Image (cartoon, rainbow, N blue to C red):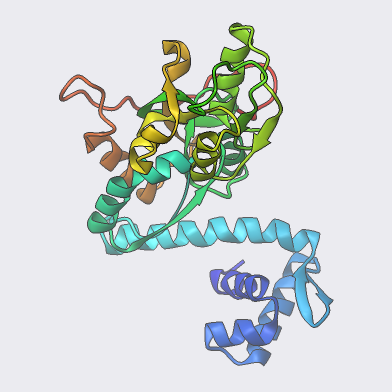
Length: 307
């Protein structure tokens, strides 16, 4: 398969039609149609179905699109390595916890953009479980997730250490039957809170799920329940006076944020991020001058891969 055919196929898949793909590629429609038909004949598979004046991918088309993305990305990296002496360029699909994106990543990504302006960073936020799954499905190149997580096929390195605290309404006198305010299932911090409540023999109320720390802390301040949040988030939001903040046991409070990627998925854009992470003061261990640990295999544990 030639790369031009894959580029045309990808454009049609993303545009949903021949005419839009042709305009995007600055080609005549007949040329795009011919190249798609030639690709289907070469592969012996139908790549698209027509539905409501749109072209949608067939099962074979979805399979090819995944390979096309990787082949075109590798081609771009190879060209960049030869023309730019390995200078990173292209796209970096990065995932992050919301708290990490809000408090840790701004200076890191600003430095990345200054050093390698030809790399477009695409940032996706979500829970650790969501991000781990997307890295494993090759929908993200790398992601910042919180321990604990368990997934085969991942390599990880320590990036940051967060201190978690319990927040609760200022009017609350007991945690018993107090609702838990948290992200959806798959949040590593939520699992830590549930572990601590069980250990302390505290029976919480129902779980109320939210999509942001702003909503969680605001609801805690309004008396709706308790939550576990990174201390850095409270500082960023300026919300300490609105809630009661309680410390947690060290094994619950100290949460390491790891940068994960698939094993064997090194690339120029990823290596650039890793190098910047190692050099950044926020990512370095407390001992001055110590290097951030290199990637290691993620722990393999029994049970679900969702953190």
